[in-house]
Length: 67
Image 1 (cartoon, rainbow, N blue to C red):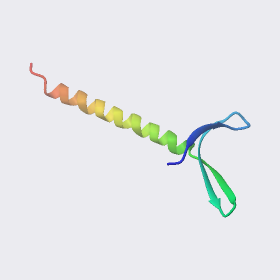
Image 2 (tube, rainbow, N blue to C red; image 1 turned 90 degrees about the horizontal axis):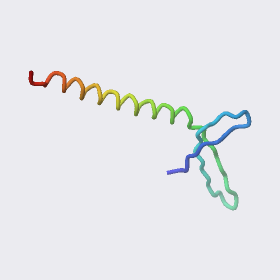
Image 3 (cartoon, rainbow, N blue to C red; image 1 turned 180 degrees about the horizontal axis):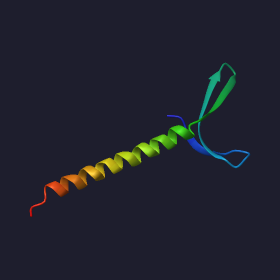
């Protein structure tokens, strides 16, 4: 698992980045990968899954009530 953190760009935009570093011989190669869209999509997916579960629970309670 690579470290993920928020980074503020020069124009003030906030991005989520994943940092990696590898040793090649005597040199260290580092990369920063923009994962902002991936993180936003995961958050949206979690919200949709929660809404789906809530709707399922509500429908089950509605149709199984004893009148």
